Length: 330
Image (cartoon, rainbow, N blue to C red; front, side, top):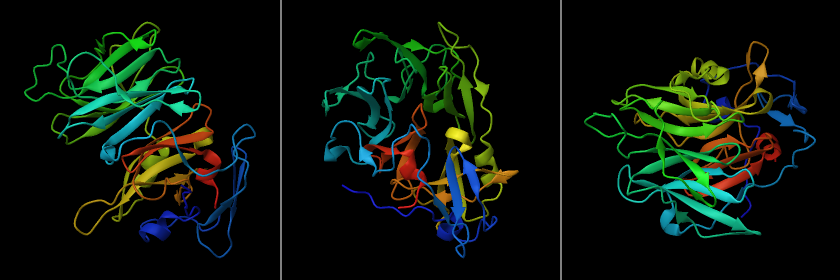
């Protein structure tokens, strides 16, 4: 199915006048020339050169196995093995916080049916993340954590090591903060684990990271450096939008996930906007292409080479799209 999108639409156009940056800008960024369209405030047209080694723009495409219609609205983040032959995702299998991790294996061009990953016992497991070399699977789990005496069980960090085509029994990651909710796991090129840490009462959260030390993880979580783009736009969001967070790619390009604040007090589904370094600040967020700026996209992340963006569409379908499509006008 071809996905239509309108890129080059600014946040102030979509969400109102909560943001009012400069109307004209031209940035040379990671090989991408940004040329303002005269007479259309904040509208940006881009050339085709994200990077010489990256694929040209194309439509967003599903990746991984074909899922059952019964899974619609129940599928969350996913991760890929370095050779792109294994896809791991988690989905809700019951009510409330009842999740399991599933794996699909690609043979040739065909993805196999997803199978539940057996990680020892009937526990709610979520947010799978593979290390850069594919030898470690880190995830969050509601299984009993050693030393946790909290009245309400929460999701802590666990790790399994690859053993052939399977995984060893999970080990508790002792840097877990007992009683806190650990979510949004991802790993960078040196194996550092990044995640969101939420207090037991759910009133506060912060981004943290955990270093891989070669044979195991560090013993303490450290606060992650703040995303400059996220902090910049949170301070300038006005009272019409909510900035959930962002993912930073090559050259500082950042995907911001943003919702409208509704009169009822709720929030619209989050959608993605692009912003780039501009002088001492950041360019006005522009609606992302490739399906990221429409519907209910979630869990976006950049490929290791910065050429692709992965995300989950409408809590159902794992997707992949060239960065050239995300950043360029249709």
